[in-house]
Amino acid sequence: MTINEIQNELIEDFAFFTDWMEKYEYIIQLGKEVPLIDEQYKTEEYIIKGCQSKVWLYPEVKDGKVYFTADSDAIITKGLVSLMVKVLSGHTAKEIVDADLYFVDEIGLKEHLSPTRANGLLSMIKQMKLYALALQVNA
Image 1 (cartoon, rainbow, N blue to C red):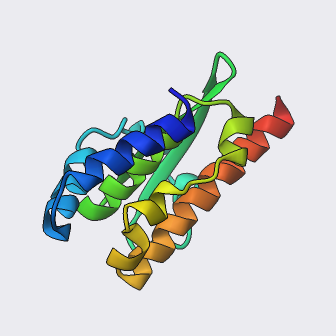
Image 2 (image 1 turned 30 degrees about the vertical axis):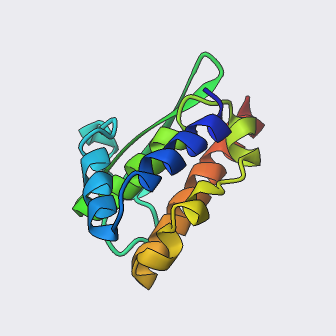
């Protein structure tokens, strides 16, 4: 699936829920499905700066595609990083760098997250794109 197809699927998934408590529960559930980062990468080097909670994100290239593993010490944040991994993992560095992540606005995340969580989400997106850019340059 393309990044946009995954985003469209998530928009449909979120439209199914009628209120934000249900949407938060879904985000928490997604956090339980995130490909977990290996303990050896839970270091300062892989912490996303700008997140109030601790969030670790590790990029890896396999067969020309970037795969992310992650974890967080907070359940909502873990769900948010899981959302981002679901959308961006398994694509080329160029696709990740060029991705327009419209689903964030479409599902209403920005207006329903606290300012610190919204900043954290932007930091996650920025870091994933920076990793992809670095991997693209090194390729």
